[in-house]
Length: 107
Image 1 (cartoon, one colour):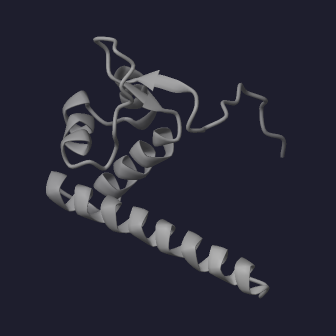
Image 2 (image 1 turned 30 degrees about the horizontal axis):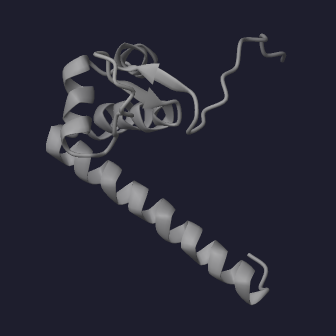
């Protein structure tokens, strides 16, 4: 089984994309993404332009949001809560790994 080659994008904190791109790649509506902005799940970068721009790493967040919405039939508030909790778990895991690295313990 061979997978077709496709373009790849480095999802990072430096490169930016517009709101419409997040909607296109995730399958969420603009309104649903604006709800994620209103609840601080994703945050636009202040570029001084009229169009809100976002770090490319948020592509993963909005795709996760769509999967959670579809798989668990979450409403907008439930979706925001689930994503906030997942982000907090990621932060805590990073802190644990950093602490273990400082103490010289393997993962």
